[in-house]
Length: 229
Image 1: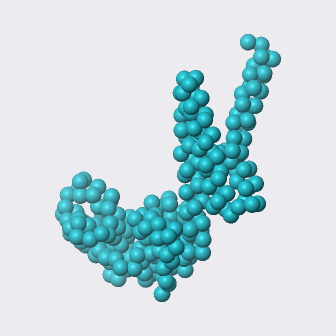
Image 2: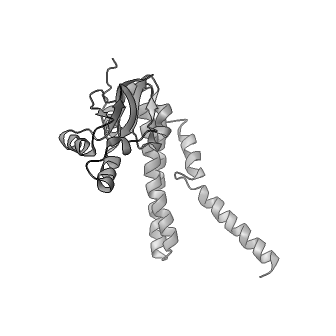
Image 3: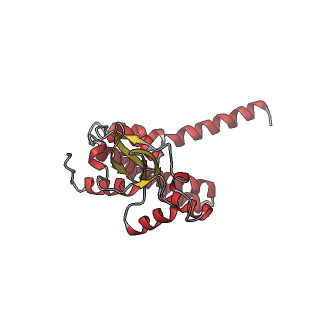
């Protein structure tokens, strides 16, 4: 193959990639452009919904064409676009539901703590007896860790029921102040699997778990907003 042919094929490939990137679907640039244009006429969430619908329509069309042509790699790309379009919309929707919401509005206020010297057996019994799955661990009046359900079960399997929660707890747990705006913390919170302790200096005020975060979004979507203390 000559240099001119190689340059031509590279140019053709770049043109194909550039054209594909302009499809009006998240997370492609074309989807971002369409979202910006629609934002002039629709609210943020409505614009994102239309881009998501458009992206899924294109994904279905590309997928059908790929199956007809037996282009399985293209079919996989279409599947990726379809689910990404939905995920991007729900991300925008989540951010819209969290606008102006403070951490104190979402935190669990009624919770149980574990003492530093409690055994895994006792923690497991408490897990069975309550709906709570993540437990702040205290020692001498201070919060020293967070015992999650997964860590509890892993410790039970590896070390047995007589091990102590101090060996299984997470000492580098996420802390949030009650007055913090939740939208500004969502990236860090999602990185911590939506688990955090809400603290004012050294005082434990509440906890956030994955379940109560999801429940808050459902209720918020239905128009219910919690009164702050």
